[in-house]
Length: 492
Image 1 (cartoon, helix red, strand yellow):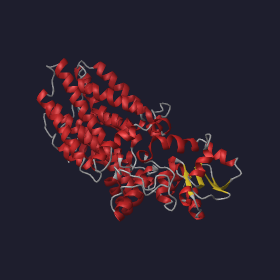
Image 2 (image 1 turned 60 degrees about the horizontal axis):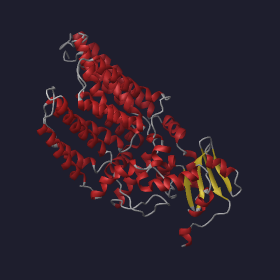
Image 3 (image 1 turned 135 degrees about the vertical axis):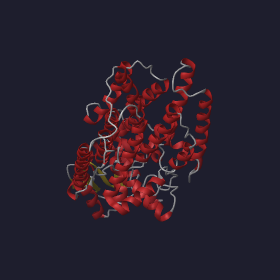
């Protein structure tokens, strides 16, 4: 066991802890409409028109996450909450493993940086198809970094990855952002610093461009063809996302979960200044570009973590080496030292196992779900079997899609389906009880409303004699119309 050095022990402990950190109860509401989609595909084949809402029923829908949904549904059907948590933790750990491989310095420096990067990215981790994008973005960047710094050319794996990615999640745009950053950074470097080390030649840049073009073509190999390329643009152009949906808002720096992001942001800036190495153009574009994306929308913090954690180690390692502040890990240890290291690993694994078992305990799962999702209210809804359509909170649309399948939702997390006009006007004006909200509910034949108890619409409905409370708790209130109406669609 003398191979079990302190350095290797640190690496093993690092990834055991990351796996334990990422293992959590799946409470993200969007998880559930993905599961419903996956089950629908498994039973009936590809989805081309909306089957889940009353407002967009039958409208064309590009289900850009169909492959991931099938995978998630299969995992859920086989392993329930444990399966989803394992899926999330496995992809998070694998993604951070590729980040570790891109880092510079010894195991101790890398471990410190990866812990910081994992804490930064963890705000993004949930059992949704975006976890696959997190992992694949780390793989793509690893290939690009190896091409630039390691002299290893694995570029032709990128189009193959894009074929897979294009059938799993629309986050493939992250891969193209990384490719574009390398092309632009190396081109600027060749113009302004032609004699720098670890440079990609003009010939190499041309190859990167060609691989990028081929990768665009590879994305078209999916059930929706060229339409898949439009999904990222449709999504980012929805103004309601930036204005009202939390993960698309700028980060709230009063929340503790954003502190690792701030630490990585400012520490990277600091170590670049402390190092005698000039800031590489590609590193600058990756740092500033992903920093802008993260400051613009909190969901992009994980992209920043993947891109910047390796950059942080390059300049930190340089600054420490220049000052002689470098630990020299031993190659071998004594038998007693190896036994101590093995005991440490064993103890950490036991602790991680206890944490995982606690996460999966039924009382904790029930509590975690009830804190953020309308579990009891949905049970009350299912018991009523009321006629007419449902108006629901955007935040709970995904959960309702899976756990109240007899009630087509008014809205859910498929923002590319609903579009900016519907979200900003029909949904938000009603949810905020703005002028004309009663007319909107009548136009859509809404006889049942499930909304946040403390929301504007709940207060307005309490004051409207046409509605009565069917169920209420601190989180959710279920309203039903006293005299049900018939929707225009039913009249027609």
